[in-house]
Image 1 (cartoon, rainbow, N blue to C red):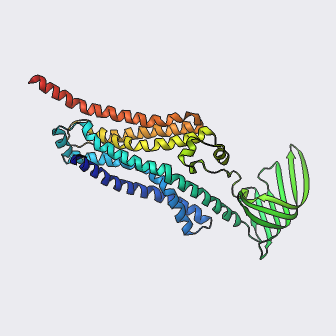
Image 2: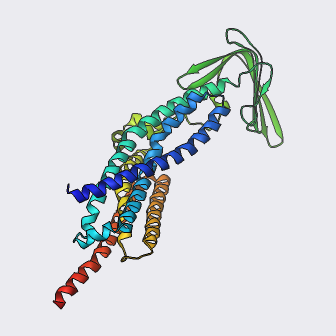
Length: 377
């Protein structure tokens, strides 16, 4: 690599490290604060909070790196222009296409970092986070089992335990589920046990009965069922809408590109949904070189001005916002219909086309001036 390319690349990488550190810190702190409030309120320790925030870090970094690449490219180009280094390079005969080469290399390096994150570290972290959330959910469920007081885990559910024996047995257990006013169920048992299973916590009630009050219009009917043993999904006391399916985003990309029946059964997703997730990961790294090239190419438009290149900076920010808006719109379309996954590539393709167009516009006046100078001679 020529010395001038190494110089520009070193400048961009230094600025990229600074902007990435600042942006990741801001995003991560905001995420950590919300997790801290949620987990501490559930009675978790500081170590659990630290673990959860660490597991969200790869996702935060993968989202921030393209923005950091844009900021480094725009700021670095502005510095080169303000210190007349960019003018000297152009006066030496370096065209915008030639100057864009180290910027493109910089964008590819950032894209490789993003690819490593989205294809390896982020799925690994999501898988671990899903497992830990399941464990925490069981612990949170257990905290509602307190003796001598009425508990209200969710709206419409009342829980009472008279006594908790030394061996863990729940003596004289009462549970009323009135979340559906038309179908109210009351469970009573002389004893109950909390059992942890792979599918979540289960409450095994012994020697009791179930009273079901059903309302249909003005009619009411009460049915009573006595049992010696009955299992109840205690995880429903946390959130009745909680899905027991595994997160699709926790699987590697290769498996998502060719989803097998086992994966689809474990996640409850369709083949198109898995394919859309895989292509979203493949398109994510393409945002980095596009963002870097936009930050560079936009600042080459226009001639030298003593007032700087603030107008070009504004246009560069607007172009990045448009590209990000298209990316978000495509993701929303794919979320509604997974078969539309080719739309994911529209944003990086249009961004790349915009970069080529801007570089062509930046190089065209120089070419016209050189042609007019040759004709005059």
